[in-house]
Amino acid sequence: MAPWRSAILGSVAGIALSSLLPIGALGAQQSTLRGVVLDRSTGQGVIGAQIVVVDEKRTVVADSQGKFKIYNLPPGRSHLVVRALGFPPRQLNVELSPGAITDQPVQLDSTDAGRLSSAQALPSMSVTALSTRVNYRLADFERRRQDGRGQYLTEDEIAKSGAYSVADAVKGMRGVTYECGGGGGCFVRMARAPMRCLPEYIVDDREMNDFGPSTPIRDIIGLEVYTGPTEVPGEYAGRYAGCGVIVIWTRSGPTRKKR
Image 1 (tube, rainbow, N blue to C red):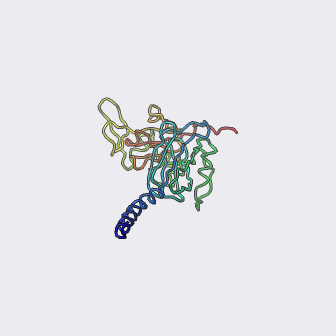
Image 2: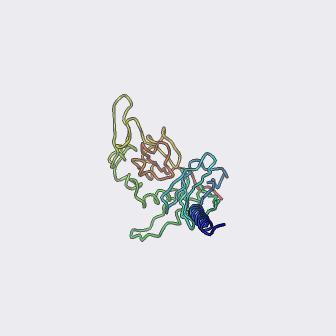
Image 3: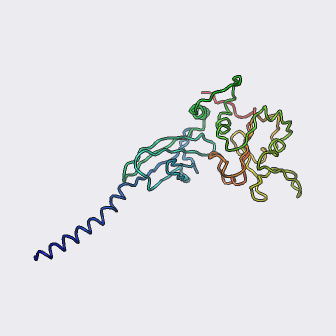
């Protein structure tokens, strides 16, 4: 073969090889995270659980079996937050290998022990007031109150306001309206919500849209008000989050389970 032909063929082969290498190298750098979110107490998949990749600002939702898959993640350590309605959120770190699928099952714990464990993981705070015993069921209430995304009323604040009903207690809050007329009586509606879109009521961590608005004010020891989807925490981000959420905690709620 003539020397000039060998040179041309060598150059063509070199160009073809160099054009393939970046594609292979790029593909090798991508990682995939796969897993399932389970309820620790039942072993069942948690439908609609949100898996947040904090560093990448990406969120996926688990399917009807609690399964999820996240593609095109950078290799190395990823910080995840997993949350779902009725469960304390869970944080974890996952090591992702280049070009590989990493399986990461996640358990969420809705039991009292799990809630207390989540609350105990919070940073310590300096308190100047006299210490008082906090109702164990208000651990999540206090955690969200520290976050400050919504509006909150404690038992003492409700008593000092002189409110005679749930609506009377929240109608003066930012972004909350109190409407009457049309034959439907009076009701609370969030100012940013569409017409006829009423807030969802959660009583002692249970959806109770019928009983919630009429909960006796004397039984309430905590109120949380979220006026729209940007405020609603992940555990209450259901299909009606756009209408707002009112969370009610009562003194006669579920008792601590014996172990």
